[in-house]
Image 1 (cartoon, one colour):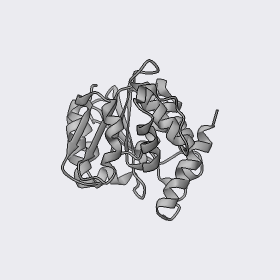
Image 2: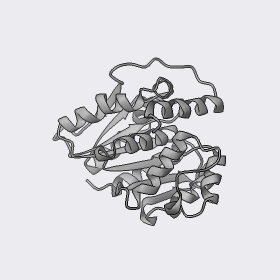
Image 3: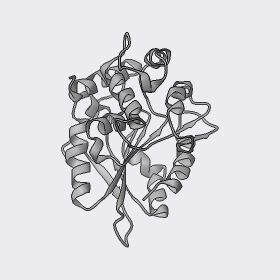
Image 4: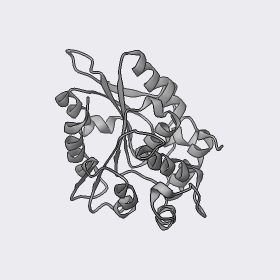
Length: 242
C-alpha cells in the first residue's frame, strides 16, 4: 500500500510542474481562521482548504464565512498552502490540528470544502480518514492530469473500474477510488460539486458528474475564479444539512 505521505509528494510535484510559486513556511500547528456564531457553537463545521497560490485569509476576503453565519453552521479556513503538500504533512496537520480538536469541542458533522488544489486535499483526507468526514464539497477541484481522467473514462463505468490504468499516479488512483466508493458499497460520504461552465477544467468533471446525485451538482456561468465560486458556495451553503 502506498503511504499518504508519498501520495502527497507526488501530487505536490505535479502542481510545481504546472507553475512555480514561492514556498511559504509550514507551521505547527497549521494556522486557521475560525468563525462561529457569538450565540452558540453549531454542531456542524465546514473545514475550508484554499487552492494553489491562495492562503486561508482569502476565504474571509471573499466572505465565505458569512454563509455559515447566515445558515447556522461554523467554518474554519485552514492555511493549507502548497508547502504542506510538499512536506508531506497536510493530512497529519489537518487531523492533529483541526479535525481532532473540532471533534473534542463537540462538532458532530465535519464537512470538508476544497477549491481547486484544495479539492484534491479534501479527497485525500477523506480517503485517509473516512470516519471523520460527514461530506465533501468540491469547488472546481483538481482531480488529476487530463490524461489520467481520459484513462479512467476509457476504462468504462466508474463503478466497474478496478483502480488500474497506464500512467495513473498514486494520488489519482486514490482520489478516484474514493469517488467510486463514496457512491457504491465502499462508502456513503456525500459528495457535492460546484464549478463554472467556462472553467477550463470543466470537461474533466463529466466522469464525476455521471456518478453523482444530480441535486448535488451546482453550476454557474463563469470560469476558474472567485467571482464564480462565491455565488456557488452561497447556493451550496443554503442546502447544507446541519
